[in-house]
Image (cartoon, rainbow, N blue to C red; front, side, top):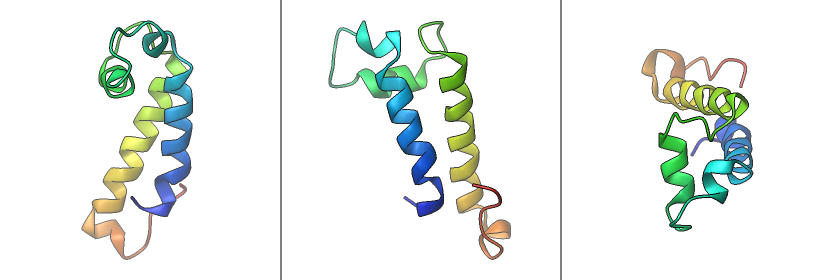
Length: 74
């Protein structure tokens, strides 16, 4: 994982760990993964925004057109 997206990833894990989705999930091993994929009401809008920002950061990191100039603003 690139260093430029590490902060967003850490924030996403922290946010999802505190969400109702993870707390109420029956299987604790896959709770973070399942809750990150879901768009239900158990995940806050803030977490959804962090997830979207992380996705855009990762996409920009792999975009060859932007790879030379670096990931902007992350």
